[in-house]
Length: 244
Image (cartoon, rainbow, N blue to C red; front, side):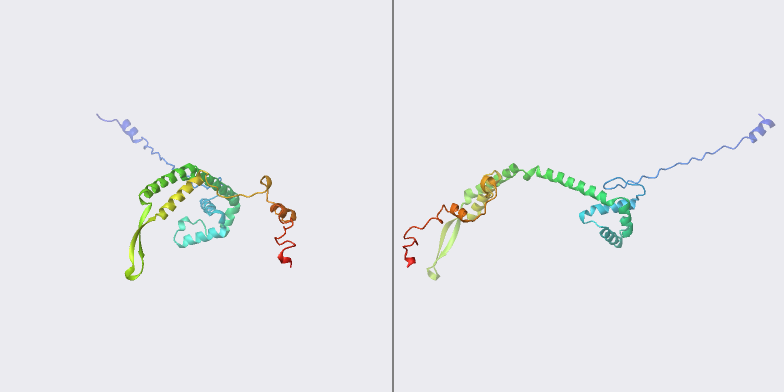
């Protein structure tokens, strides 16, 4: 079938296909660097955040010069990637602008709370508990008792005499080292359960302080009046031989 001139002219006038350009926008990854304490402020760069975190971790001995020396040392060792700055003035500016002092107070307080929690956890279990220590001591005492059952007396050899008149004598000797260790364990058990007084506390009347008045009245009361009482005759009294 032959195409007409009209159809040929219309086909030649068809517009060219339109190609749409699609632009894919990839969101910039958000900076996930976080402060050890507090909220990140405007204009607070990642370098400033790193510097503060390092500064806080220095503890109570922290200082700007000390942090600067640390960064200079890191730089000399080829660790430039972890060095936010080596300028002490920059550190001071960051400290002033972003309130490092107040942040460190909060950080230190949080660290102390963490230490208290950790200490409480440690002291609430295991050998920190008295009854657990007693269990271990009793196990140790049982072991020593078993050893003492067959080794309370040990064989000992002594040489008696001199020269051709000497002779070897065998004797039994008390196993003092093992017995001493056993008694120490028993003593430790007694201390744990309150069976041994750890110290003697001396106090005055009604638990108050001791009166240190060493006057005549106090001395007389202390010795039952012997000092103030006149000596009996014959005991260094007026008729004693020492009066001659």
